[in-house]
Image (tube, rainbow, N blue to C red; front, top):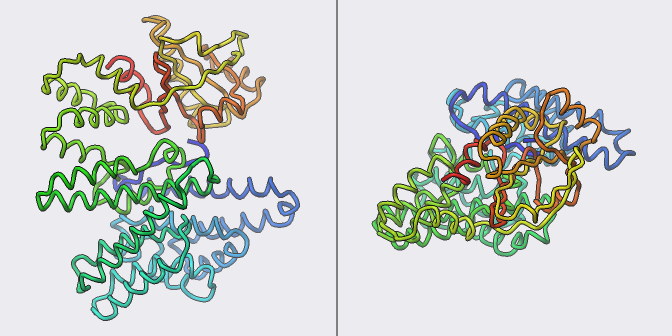
Length: 481
């Protein structure tokens, strides 16, 4: 996806994957710098080359030359501090579960981390949470260990609630690490309270209304809402262990309710946090599955069915399990009726729109009521979009041959030029309908990255299908459950 990385960290093929993600992260950060430069042409003339050189130097020396890394970090701190801060914490996250790295210094190495702690106060501030986590993990002296934890509690109290240094992420990791160490329970509890109080305040106060937030604040909102759900799920797990099922169900329900929503999914700033906090191979970014398990164990069939349906909405491979449970529940409602009702209850109505295709045909959404419509937002400039086009053409051909009125496809080329799109379609031999995606329709469907697909139901509900999903399988699951 362009404009946002949605690659899921995994231990499988960690080395090659890490290199890929580093390259992607570097491109995203440098692209962000380029956008800033375009917005400030005077500054661009003066500083662009310096900033790009400093960031390139910082990336080249990650995990290699500590002295050079520190030199470039100092330059980045002066020229592009936000980009440096993001690079430090995302790079550390990517190496966190790498077994080839020494314990306690998963990403930067001991020399690099030690060097970044010295000299430059801005750089020191950026690496402080990593340093403190490392100290806690390595310390065996109970007095020093308690002091480090208390220092971090004070650090949390002194800083504002913002994405920045991912302070809450490291606080939760410290809390997890000290569970088996010689730290008094009141100190453990104080750290947990300090972290969760910050998260709750951020979710319920600072970043409550997404309509009043800037893009950067929306990224913070996504991060904090994920952490809210994570901490609630942790408490739910603890309740399950002591056989307090009702309490666990309430906490899992809160995690599902307060966790990342559709707005947050567009920004997806919590994937690295989920990877670091998770003990599983694939990070958990929602908590519907354990919630459903507890509901089934309790015998709450109605709520369990609703929850399992939400799981199937997100992951088509869960559809068969939902069907089996629906049949076992012996409900009188046919599955098809249940499925349609569940979709209508879950998803919001799409606003009417109209566009003209490059072939000159007018597409009015109101004319397609009672039918499924698949919108694909893409661009010739977007490599992941272009890579999906053969699959789109294959689906279009299948639909033309088999039940053409079941699903209508319309693709929208965004931030593009009509002659370029026409040339692209002709050269590739693509025949699926395409219209130019204007700013109005992009905003209407809240498109923040590309490619993004939106499936509109016969009842007019809009279902977002993001990049990095088996989109054809998911489309067919909705249409032919």
